[in-house]
Length: 274
Length: 274
Image 1 (cartoon, rainbow over the protein chains, first blue to last red):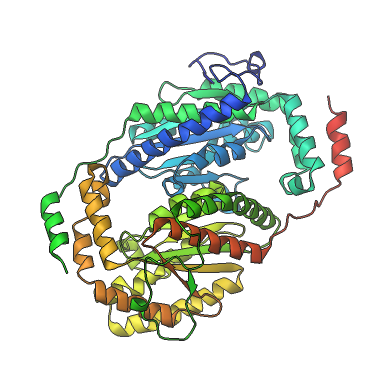
Image 2: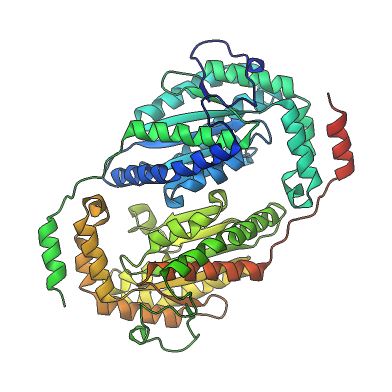
């Protein structure tokens, strides 16, 4: 994966969605490397959770964005599945409900944030409000323009409150999406995942790529940078997101809190009971 | 595990917390058997989720109750960890907040229920309101008495709305609890899990056992029976809860919904695009 340089124009066509930068050399090695991260990831998560129980406000928010079939759901299943589920707060954002539309676009996002000690996962996010909203002209352009700054302010306030924001753009190619959609059609057990409207969205591919390029440029900040994850290869995508989470958790280096009680006395009380 | 007979008095002292009824013969076999359930559990969960996306209102609610150290959290980690985390809605209930106390005891429970297609997990639940509330005299006895019926009405309404309620009492022995609490004290990395107040609760062991016996008798119903899971052996506890979930999911037999669109036409549209 690549940390998108802050403040520079982004040209998605310059990035090969099938690349495996920094990754293991093939699928077997990639899967094994991801599995090996399971133990350290879960161990760090437990420390983060324990620290949170003692007042540490730090937490992780993983934001997953990408075109249909880019593997947001698969990442949750395979990467977040490595963690203890009780410390994960997962939210998939669909088209806003009438109630949600009655509030600022960040309202439903704020309600789904991870609590201290948790790992939050957004499958889609507030970025939809500058992606589909822009491509489909769902709100006036002036409102879209103001949202980039609102998002940056929001994410800065999150980081100031102890949230490490890890934003991943799962980058797939136009042709890989076709293959994945066809594969869904070929398997009746996958038809429930298919919506003919996905083909209409696909017809707007260039407009979506442009909307992503703008979002990555305008909302890539030093405190909440974007990561571009080539996602044509599922094993690489899983490895890359696991690796990113591992690096961020290691940097946080959460510690088990010390006892705030008399251990010896408690031991005695337990031993002398009936 | 044992399905607690409906309508009969319950004597917890008659059940050996170290027993392994119906289970594999030892720890190694038990762990292997639980791991083997991972694949069918996840497959059934996906079908449940897919059916839910197509309007099927069915879902599972796993209620975990038991004394401190009985392994509610461990069950979530090891059993619920077998599922796709995005289809699980996990809620751990702590002492009620002032806001929660301003409502009926079922208010916070209703807000945490699984949505159609999901597997909901309660680590503690509305049963605390007839357990600690009874033992600690937190509310008048008349109110406690009325709650058993309120719980039964509530659970019947859940089942009528498609919720399969699976209630597990994780049964540990007084002595096993002592050993687990001492183990936490022996390991500084576990001190965060320890609270000296746990020793005060432990002193009320007989009152808690009695409160559980009453709850199991009065709220064990044909539509939402209690399961008694001997929990002195962690491997057996994990096996038993996995097995219960597998049986219930198999009984639901959720099906992938058929396509509600023209598959051939969609395939053609995808292939003819640029």
